[in-house]
Length: 196
Image 1 (spheres, rainbow, N blue to C red):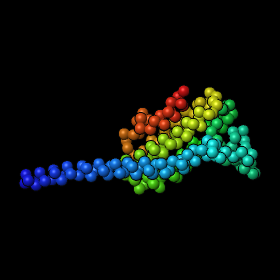
Image 2 (image 1 turned 90 degrees about the vertical axis):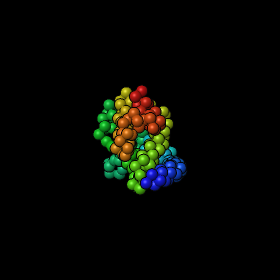
Image 3 (image 1 turned 30 degrees about the vertical axis):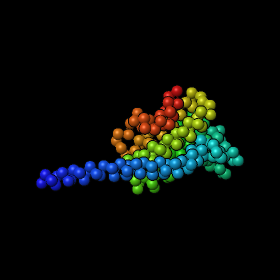
């Protein structure tokens, strides 16, 4: 009996190396997947904030810069704009903004992949994608002009992104803003910009 227990212990110790190699392989695979998806993420963010051909300069627009369709129908604002007066701030509060559409498109990109991943890898994928999105948004925000109402709107947008992330994270340990910002520095920087 003691001999069997000792053999079992040796077998378990031998699996430690296998587990480490699988962990490293899954980490490398996740990095590869994220780097493959980042160009699409950059395009999604670029379209949402109005960079890299995402703008709609060839069409008529309303006072917020939203394209106006024939017959008076409008679609949601296409570009990031934090230079808001009272009227445009009110409109931004009642209409679907670029952040909602951007997050929806990110969902369309990563949800089909996440359903096939274990929770930890799914969280890693989400954090990697959010990091790429936050870097791109930060670059666009740094080029923007702000009014006090625009700063309030930015804060609202960043809170939406944080809630979007927390709603999709599987690990209960990652569902706080502090922890999420620790594991995703670009998201932390976006949060800091909103606080300024």
